[in-house]
Image (cartoon, rainbow, N blue to C red):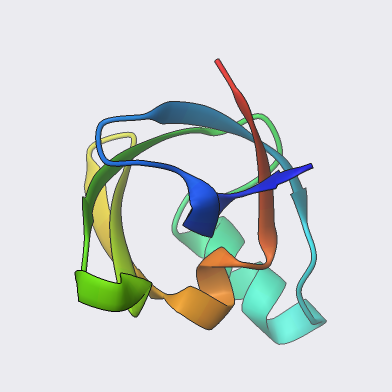
Length: 75
C-alpha cells in the first residue's frame, strides 16, 4: 500500500487507512483526514521532511513521520 509521504507534488489520492495512535488519529480526523477523504499534495520540503496537503478547503503541513502513517490510493 502507498503512503502519503511517497506521493508526488500535484498528485490526488484517497485515504485508505490511518495507522496512528488514538490521539494522533483524532487530530487527523479533526483536519478532515479520514478514510475515503481526498487529498491533494501541494508541496514537499527538500529531503521530504514535511509535506503540504489540501483536504477540502484546508491546507495542512504534516511532518514526514505523520505522513508515513497515512495509507492512500490513487483517485
